[in-house]
Length: 455
Image (cartoon, rainbow, N blue to C red):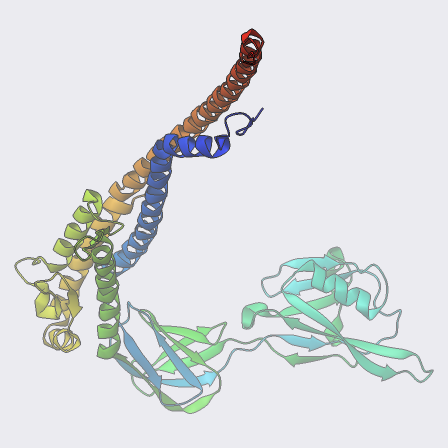
């Protein structure tokens, strides 16, 4: 019950609110601390994610051929070349004698009732798949063939009408894969009929035909020499060297020149991209660790990582990994350097020169730097034992503890408000009682005072 100034005239509610504001100061300080810790956790988690991404890229960069990059060209548009990181500089001539084709047949034309009963599909390796359509229409058989998933697809083709006006249809059946291994035959009859030789090959029927015989692609290397070599492929792609593939699309009687060459520009770009990512991470840590000092009388603003020893140690470890010599050779010899302010930079010209002078040593030095970065990133960002991960876990535990403390303060403050309201309510009641007593005493005193006599 609130008796806001009923007797005393005091603004009791405002007094209680003011007292509660003072009592709530400890809770407010804890709440501010939670907000601060939550911000720190968010930034640490983001930093940890970036570090994990760096670890993955560093692991790739640490590979022995991580800088390998090639340009692959062919002298004819009908031949394309692809070179992977394990490739080497290479040049040869290719003669394309055949391209791969998918086996395809078309049946004779038939009416609506010509497609019922058992059929058996025989693959090139002798595998037999018995197919029985639910009805006798061409669509029933096509659906049954496609549903069997036997490596072929069937399509209904309209074939006009018979002399009596009955609609006719054909089935075009095509192997899913190109090459000789995709060849097949379709028989009317069961598997047992095929085995007994009593089935009928659909293509042998009058009006049926083989549209395309499945064949492998065929190329020759070193044509016209004693080392001439023939390669076949069920697709149109051939592996002609380690991590070097050529794909053909047309026959070419004239030799096609295939060239795989090292791409120095792409190698430098790959190294530059990796180093820039490390530099960006270092800059991010630096910016988050700065303390902005205001003018005299103004408050100093701390960075989200200011004073965090784990982040500071991470920054030091990353810097050491990227700038310390490897086997006595400084990373600056390949264009990776750090100035007196700790800013990491990459010199493309120096890196390109290092590649030209000694490609192997440049790759070895770059891989060693990446390996050290991978180790540092793993030490700090491992999802179970990473130092940064543990730091985040510790902050989260502290926030949970602070949140529990806030809940306790909510209970205390509720009790405090109830006590103040009760106290002020009782005060008003007491004042009311005293006021009544004062009025009674005043009336009694008036009765005791004798009336004045006239002279």
